[in-house]
Length: 616
Image (cartoon, rainbow, N blue to C red; front, side, top):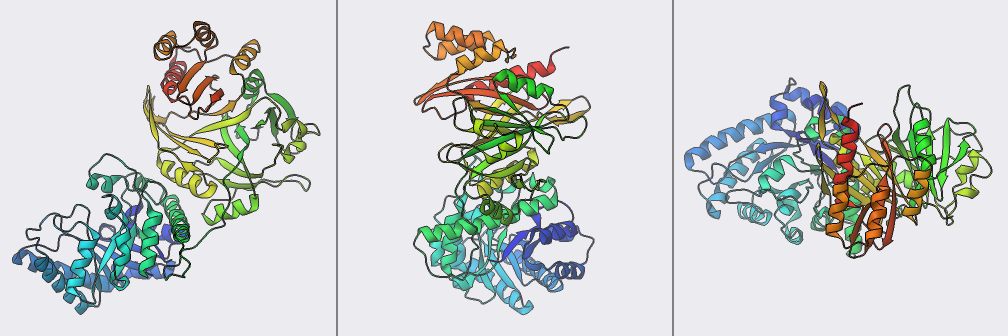
């Protein structure tokens, strides 16, 4: 499949955008008119630069508000079109995108629309270019792809075809099956975009909230499957209007974009296979190594220049120190099957932070190969000849992800590198497991992170939630596996004012599940653990919401435990103080409770905020 991207998706100058697209591996690009108008390069220089980069120039866009106008306006529009067609000749682009009229149309009869499009097609033919007519979802008279295609058929000119844009189809919840009825030769161009399902008008959603495939909620796999069945074999190009993407690093965004198209090809091929499609269709979609989802967390790593505070917290929680690695500046702490690595090889002054996560997978080499084909950066770690070699990749927030060989009994061979007894003590004995990990995401990489964990690690995104905090709403996105062996929570924290600058409220944590939280809390208190001091108002509200036994409520209050309940079970949990940007959570799941105590999150945020801003 030929891949493309519109320059409007990216930040920077036209030259910077072109270079980033080439580095990311795109076959071609769409030149957005504003990028050319504001560029210091001449059309000929743009053409030459694209050739040097190995990029084809596939489309010039947009040509707006042509059809459905009066005769005087039509003459002006044809003059404008002639100028653009001449410009396209200088660029070496043979296709222009013409959008259905949204602003100046006064005539909506199909015979008039077809007659005017016929004049545009004839003029395009004279210049040796083609017109791809696109139905905008908010077009005044033409706003669906089937109507646009009927007009193209009525004109019946070799230089007029349609442009299919997934956003304009799926944002209106239109069925994509009729795409299969379109004549492939008349589909001149295809654009794809994803989007979240928000309660917005379609125009606002389009202009600000489009995202790359896999980062929203559209069924793009089905769209691609129906497109493939038409016999279309031209470019599939991204057209994303997103305020965040246009402020982010241009190269990172281009890589994220390319990753989304690789993922989309796999999803489209899988949809066709599930529908019994066995023929080799002209639109050949690449497939990736298929790997099962992770079975669980192998370890979590906290990195700091000074680690005593982290060691103290883990010891107070009941973790056992398994000693130091024989060749690396790291420690291993275990509690049941929960393993925490403390990495001391941090730059001077670096405060504790979550630096790496290990996931148990069936085949680390195959999983790593898949991730690399999805453009995940490789993270090597030095190993001696007799030490385990981890397959490592970097997540968008720079967290290192290690793909580890899972085992039926829950042991990890690498723990023997900390001493002969460590491996045996890491099995499925009573104690704890890593229940979930909560990672704070930079605002400009949140959507990228969702796609990364979906495509590279086969985690499934759940509907996102927004949690109130003293500094604003925190967007929370759960990513998990089907059996909940891995639960990963991505949080987009609000920006807050601190002194002379604006900073992200950056906190994240590792949660451990135990069988008896009350006993764990009592033991931790005896070891000197300082819990978050939960306000009395919380427990009074808890008594009002749930019919709890007085003694049980007193126990919760005494130990600063939080509680939630749903139709499937109960959830108890508590939090430690924060060191650096890290804190720990201990949880107990009773029955079939599958959440995270979301009603308690505002309490936790408020208490932590108070601690950070309390007077010394």
